[in-house]
Structure formats: structure tokens, C-alpha cells
Length: 221
Image (tube, rainbow, N blue to C red; front, top):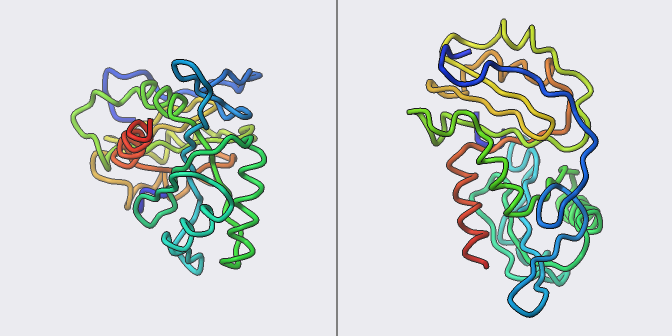
């Protein structure tokens, strides 16, 4: 499995935290229009965009063309990372405006719909810090973060427990499904059946990709 996606460890037992009403905080959360205050002025927010299902099957989207299209729409410092649909840019537009504009741009120019997850650097760092497996021996591609947007309508944790391998572990919150698989996710029965067990809008990235995107966003300042 690409990154565009219970181990018996001393880590917390896999559990589901019921969704709570979420108040968006400036610079965190999925929220609307996060502005980052500089020393004496407001600057445009740095956004990290995560497309779902890019460059698999018939959903082909050349990254150079995406950069050109987004730049033409007035987004600043547009950058991409690998071909699985990761993009960074600056903008002072709201999250909902950006998502609607970019998803329509993809539909009109590439002929398919891809759901776009937009996240700020502080929010990404918060989710990465909350990863209960971050200190385990196996990192990188052995750990995946499934970013969840909107409500979780089904979470069959009993079946998830039955499907996971003995050396796999997961942890579920209302914002992220953390998955630990030291043998990789390609043969994981839990990941194969995850969409049947967990109903929510999700897109996955492995820890390597998350760390790289966080560093790229940090470098953008």
C-alpha cells in the first residue's frame, strides 16, 4: 500500500474516542482562515493539501501542471512532494473557499474529483505529537496517519481488533486513525478491510511523508 492511504506493546490500548464538538482555534484544527501573526503584521497562511486517491487507477494528475494551475489562481509559493497528491502553498483565503476552488480546478482540468484535506502546520504537528507509536522502534513507513475530516459515522472496533495482526496496533480519535505495522501495510488485513470498519472521509500518509511535509511547511516560514 502507498502512503496515500494489537501489537502487545506498553502503548495505550486501541480505543475509539467519541467525536466531540470541535471549536476551531487559530492556527489549529481544520477551521476557517487561519492567519499566522508575524512580529508586526499578518502574513498569508501556509497550507498543506492532501489529495485522496491521486495517481492510482485513472486519476492522473501531473504535479507540475497542478503547480501551474494553483499559481495561476493566485496561490503563493506552490510546492508539491512526491506524486501521491501532496501540495503546499500560501493563501489568505478561507479553508472552505480554497477547498472548493482547488477541487473544482482538479475536476475541470484532470477530469475527476479528488477530495482535498487542508491542514495547517500547527495542526499537523499536533496530530503527529499525539501519535502513541511515535517512540516505537519501527518508524517511517511502519507508521501511518489516516487524517479524518468530518464525522465518523461507523467505527467497528471489535472487527478491527479481529482483523489486525498480532504485531499491529491502532489508535483512533475523532481526527486521526494511527496505525502501526512493523511488517508494512501492504498485506495488512485490517487496512484491506478498513473502509468497511471505519466510515469517515480519510486520507493516509506514512510518517516519513508527514515529517517531510512538516519540515517543508516550516521552511516556508
